[in-house]
Length: 520
Image 1 (cartoon, helix red, strand yellow):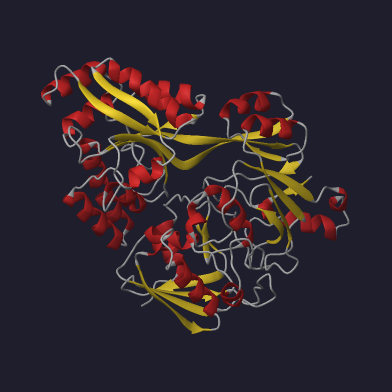
Image 2 (image 1 turned 60 degrees about the vertical axis):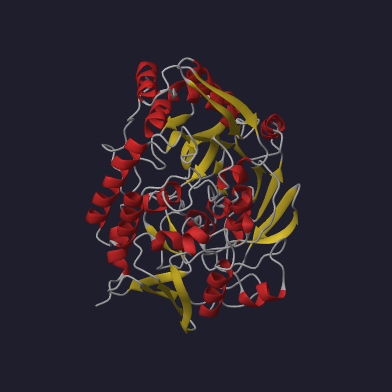
């Protein structure tokens, strides 16, 4: 007997997801999640909606690389900012962890937990006027599966097939409890358009906005898609502006050149928030600042040394110095709201204790301290600042590190070409995703057969209570082994113009949707 969508949503509702959602879905009137239904009502009633602004100017902190939702830029935040407006997945997940129908109206999973059948929304138009069909879904998944960027999300998929014009099926290699939340990462593109065009600077999605013009180094203009299946949104024109210098961006916001501003330089946030001139909000995102330890390099292959370094980590000072106090300390590559990690389990196993750190170093055979050589850091960023705080603490227990900024820090850690390093890692709010940090070819070169086996067991277990028990065992082992030192989860500071309805979300890339915006 097939398990219907209601059962799946019930299982997944406990999961808070990285892939921040778009509000609730209203299938009765075919509205997309987050579309400003109130705006439609105003117009029908002859209200003042027509007098409001219909454009918005949005800050972007860095240049874009590509609009392709499946290529190397698929996980690059600034690129996802744009792709999210043009393209949509079969399913989204909102900020509470609920699965939200998007291009799929509903779905079924068979008793094996390996076969998922998706019923597509009929009448959905791509920006080229073509109707969405199952062949576009299959093409999009297969196209994404030919790229390395989304491998962590598609490595469980065996095949994708067309059942009928409005039904697509995805077959998994094994049952995977987190699969549905991963579906949110697969944007659906027009097969016809993508086969005939490059998607680097062109697009053809089903989203509420279509591309008007783009210069990858300066600005992108998009306009509302009149045939959007969820109803034409309130904002008719959105202009994204690249301003790489944070102070210049803050000035542009204050002078009114920008309506939406993410305070990339967090120092700019408090003065703007305190002025009372703007709307503001701190949004805890699914992103961890972490100190990576190469577990295969002496003496970091010794658990006692890793534990000692963990005790020598002053998170409170790091947060104050590196992120203006606008972050939350973390001890795992997840949050306490992540499925599989309760408030009780989310604790600090290594409180700042230099005496305990010295004791463990002596027990490990280093009573006089040690020299850990160079620490690879992401330069000119908050990562470098908390590394400096750590360096000062380590000096007090006789441990030396030399901080070296590297332009190839990410590649260095992926290739294990480092001893210690700073890094920022995004996560979903399901412990299944944290396997990327603790098993396989992880950046810390951490290798524990029991942990790997437990993660595999957790992936196949569809009972949420049993799955939570499995992840509880993983957490206990990881706490003890201390393969890395998670520092804090960022709270992203947003400010936006008075009179603008704006909803910031938890996903670092999908942190807002223009279709949810409107002017009062």
